[in-house]
Length: 270
Image (cartoon, rainbow, N blue to C red; front, side, top):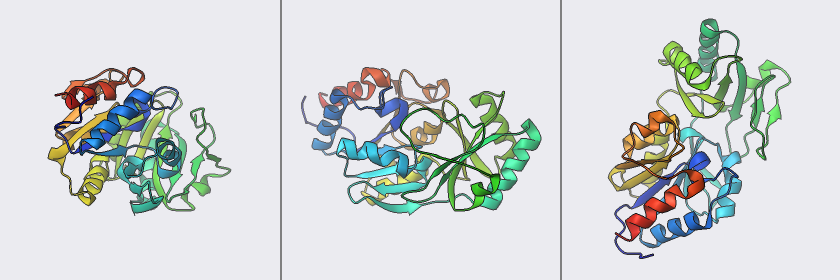
């Protein structure tokens, strides 16, 4: 693989469904393609909906030393220094109002929440369907615990509505108070208004002296739409949500079939 003229100075990759395969690992081929891109002068920034506590172990395993954008843009994290550079929290009074309005519209919600900070717990309320796997969380014993410490986000589920329908209903009801994104299966999130992967990525890029025009971005879910809008070139995975494919410049192979590596290898060899 040539390390000649790579046309981008910044490679931004989502994690779940994009950089990570279904078994939460990164293939050797993708690692080598990213290493070749960085050897050719590009920076790699991970841009994920996961907050830092759920991202750090993956970055450490990759030997990743650079900046990462976590929590849907809420956190800019320096992986090499294990240090949080910026963090945006959700106004809890506004979030409480938003939840009340959504519940008035669609009925009771199942709730979880991510607390702010390098070691912020993820709280899981009764009935909330947490994804199986190694990511740690703390059961909420009573609803008041939700508001006991600063939050980055609140996760909502509904007993009968699907993810897209819930996100659409919530956005229609409280879109002027908070942002609502669908970030993955069973993962509809309430975020501070105006916060997105694009805002976090632009902050991280600025620290590196890089711009949107320098950037190629990879993703798979509707929460990646703002990042694609910001970057010069957006690449959706074959497994991506249809709404992201609709705004992508191109669609590559799936996360399990080295979709990122395919594009990077092509760009590296000219």
